[in-house]
Image (cartoon, rainbow, N blue to C red):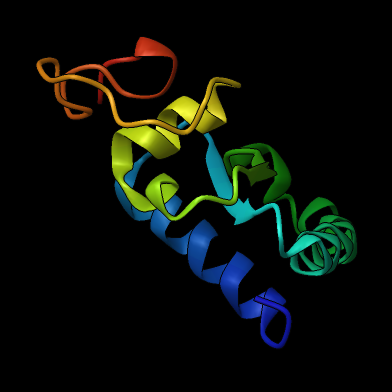
Length: 108
């Protein structure tokens, strides 16, 4: 994340177009605040290019979010809980994240 921030952002944007998503959220472990800072800086550097090329309005917004540090946040429902501002603990299933994802939104 720290060495190839622009490549990470470009890849995320390409995937967002391919998957037709509404928003890109890059979750960064809270222990790696420098990586978040580098991603925020790269986003600020990328915005003028996207504005001048007319792509900014056609791409979904990108959010870089710090998430809890425990290893358990690597589990998908724990990550969703952490992004929603809750403890990074796994959820009981059903529903699966494919049925009710971030903020309970269904997948498209």
